Amino acid sequence: MNSEEYFYAIALRECSQIGDIHFHKLVRTFGSAQEAWKRAKKEHKKLEGIGQRTVSDIGNESHLKFAEEELNFCEKNNIQIRLKHLKETPSLLNECNDAPAILYQKGNIEDIQSKISIVGTRNMTAYGKHFIEDFFQATQSSEYITVSGLALGVDKEVHEQSVLHQKPTIAVLAHGFQYLYPTKNRKLSEKILHEGGALITEFSSSRKPDRENFIQRNRIVAGISPATIVVETGFGGGSVSTAAFANDYNRDVFALPGKIMDSYSQGCNQLIFHNKATAISTVKDLIELLGLNAPKEKIEELFPHSETIIQLSNNQHLIYQSIQYYPQISLDDLAQRIDLPTHKILPIILELELLGKVKSFSGRQFIAI
Image (cartoon, rainbow, N blue to C red; front, side, top):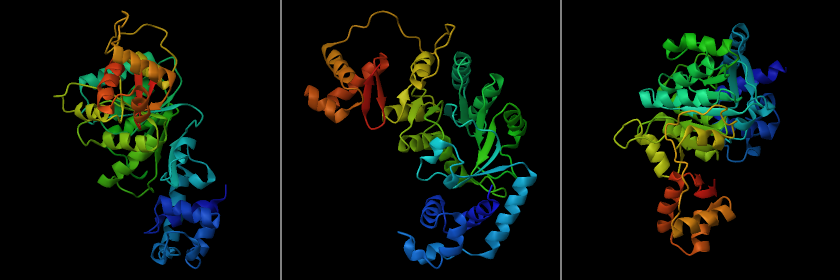
C-alpha cells in the first residue's frame, strides 16, 4: 500500500472547493493525488473547467495535518481506506461519475457477489414489514448481499432480516466513524460486522450526521447495486431520492405499491405512475426479475396471480406481440410501428404490466415477460 497516496488523497478531498468530480479530474490530469497536490496550483491551466479559485485551497498545511490524524484514526480503529482511482471501491459504484473518491470501510465487501439495495421510510408499517419478511423467506436459498442505510424502520428491518437469514449486508452511513447514528442501531452494526457484512461511508471520521449528508449517502446506496427496491415511502421521502439516483445510474428500480390513501405508499405509487419504478406484483415475480434463484418451496404471495389463461383484447394482443418481437422497444418506436398514439398505448401497457405480461424500464422501454 502506498500510504503517501492515501495521505494526499485525504488532504486533497478536504480542500474547500474539491468535490468528488473535481477530485477525479485532478487525478486523471496529474496521475495521482500526490502529484495533484504538488502541481495543481501552479499548473491549473491544464485542468479543463477548473479555475484558479477552485485549486486555491490546495497546499493548505492544515489539510495535511487533518490527513495525518485521519490515517492514525483509521489505523487504530481497523478502518480500511478505499480509493476510487486505484479501483479499490466496489466496481459498480466506480461506474458512477459522481462516485465518492474515498470510501472508509469496516468489515468486508465481496465485490463479485450480487447486491440488492432495499430502502424505505423510517415509519415502516406492518405491510412493509410483511413484504420484507416474505422476500427474505423466499430468497433464503439465493446468494446476494443487501445494502441499506442503517436508519430506523425499513433500513433496520432489512439489516436485521439479513443477519437472521445469514446474508451479508452493507450499511451505508451518513457520517464518519466517530459517530453511530441512530445510537439505537449500535448493537445491530456490531452484528452486521460479526456476520461478515460491512459499514461504509464517504465521510471522514469527525463528520457528524448532518441533514444534507443523508441525501448524499443515498447515491452510494443506489450506485453500489444493479437494483434498488423501495418498500415504503411518502411523497418526497429520502427513498425517492435513492430511486432518482438509481434511475440516473441506469439501475433497475422496483417499488411496492399500496393504497392511495396510505401516506407511506404514496411515494412508491408516484414512482410507479411516473415510470420511475417497476411495480412489485408478487414476490415470486420480483425474484425472477432480480435474477435470483426461484424459491424451492411454494410461498404465499402478497399479490397472488391467477393461474387461469388470460384472454387479451385486440389492442393488448397487438401491443404485447410488438413488445415481444422487439425487446426493449421505446414508447415512441412502438407508437410508430403499430400506428397508435402514445396516450392510447400507455394505459394498455399498464394493463399488461398488471397482468404480468410486460415489464417497463426507465426511459419508457418495455420487454415482454
